[in-house]
Length: 173
Image (cartoon, rainbow, N blue to C red; front, side, top):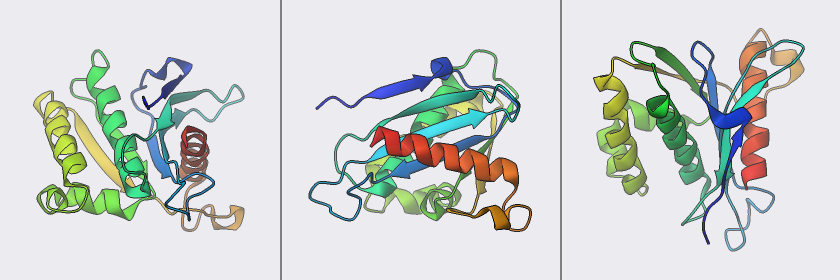
């Protein structure tokens, strides 16, 4: 089946605003036979209008959550590349997935892993921002935090962004 992708507010990436990624195994995440995965990248501005930008969708192929996390990263990179006038910009990309952070730190090793084809694609895409003087800063944020943890182990901004990505990835699934 053809996978679906949805734009949130046109899906055009904004500069100077953190991006949040997530993958989801959906409501049947524990049952590999019927699991359907989704992914999302989002950005938001914390004001009364609360605008959100981004994309989300379902995952094609093998339905495992690490692949959906990679799909979110892949589509975030494509959004950065496809945006006009991003030369010289820095993008802060936040994820609660240690697998993504570790893979980005040692992409050669990641390519040799079970999702090597996906990592190879990420490696190729990653060359484009570098060639256009675009800096990518990957940030690990804590997953599934509570209100009480804001200001100690996670900022309010990162908690809201991470929760939004989680919600949209779930929709994608």
